[in-house]
Amino acid sequence: MAAAVPLEIRTQRLYLRPWRAADAEALHPILVANYEHLAPWIPPRVATPSVVPLLADRLAAFGTEFETDREWRFAMLTSDERTLLGEIDLFPRSAAGRVAFADADRAEIGYWLRADETGRGLATEAVRAIIDVARRTGRFAHLEIRCDARNEPSAAVPKRLGFSLATTIDEPSKSAEGAAVQLQVWTLDTR
Image (cartoon, rainbow, N blue to C red; front, side, top):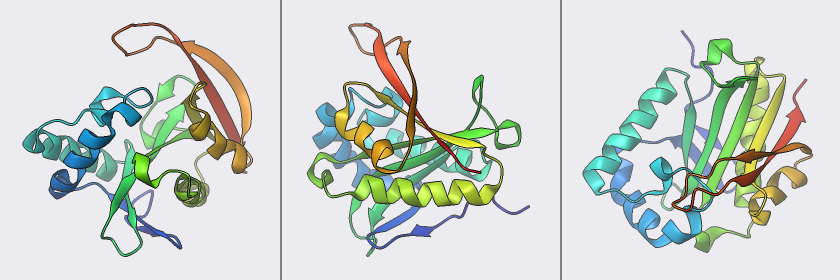
């Protein structure tokens, strides 16, 4: 059976491919250095800089999810494949939440960049590439980007790419404070 999405995506400045357990060595210092930058915005299971063996297990699990079309988490690297920049994701969804690809009628896009690489349009370039991939599946009627309303740089990406703000919802925070956050849901029709 053919994969729902390609295993490699190249843009002018980026190389996107599934995470590998071997990426843990390079990812660990990035997560350590960027924890304060990432932790307010992305789930702890992604942002937390676990020890390298546990991080390798986490990345291997991401690879398994990729292979089974449950979620597609791409490592985002420079086009020369030398520098790890962050992550770009595509998650199959239905109105009820994240689902298996066969049950999806929409998809959610997620992304993060290390702090020293922000402000150069790399997230926008990666999201544009993932939009093209999602369209080619023929499965998704629309795409969503969900981001904390306080995260203005993240919200600038869907604005730049023609997404519309569909709604803002209260979501319980996974932070220690437990306060609700305002989550913006941006949508783009793909057909």
